[in-house]
Image 1 (cartoon, rainbow, N blue to C red):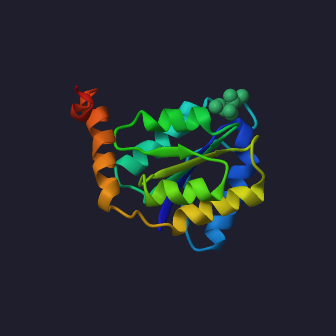
Image 2: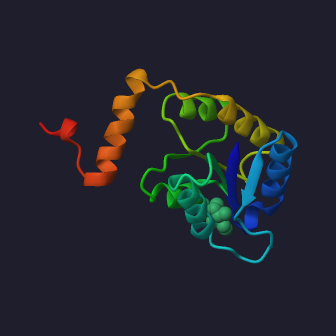
Length: 154
Ligand code: RB5
């Protein structure tokens, strides 16, 4: 399984540890984030990872900034991306099972490395359940593509 990982200057160390952790488990991890402590604008790596996921170059993406907020917001602007910022493994798992997230994000200033490892483990091991969830995923896509949702008309 091939993953892309991205980060800003706040999350260099956590990115490195998560990358090594996943490579140790046999994942191929493409690093498109910064490895420097110089200021780095998170939309750049958020976009790069999102682009690779949306284009099918990788099977999923991991994004880390200070809170995980800015970098996941940036990724979510790319069509087809469902990026979820979370601080707990339960949300990470359900985000795959119910929401079919294709990017997981978290904050290096918010959680510790062991929680981050649990989050990626739960997320990578979870499977999208489809079924009743697919109609909502389709509605999210409808909003994205048309800026409108027929089901919300009165
Ligand atoms: C950088 O200072 C910080 O704003 C960024 O890492 C992130 O937390 C944004 O959402």
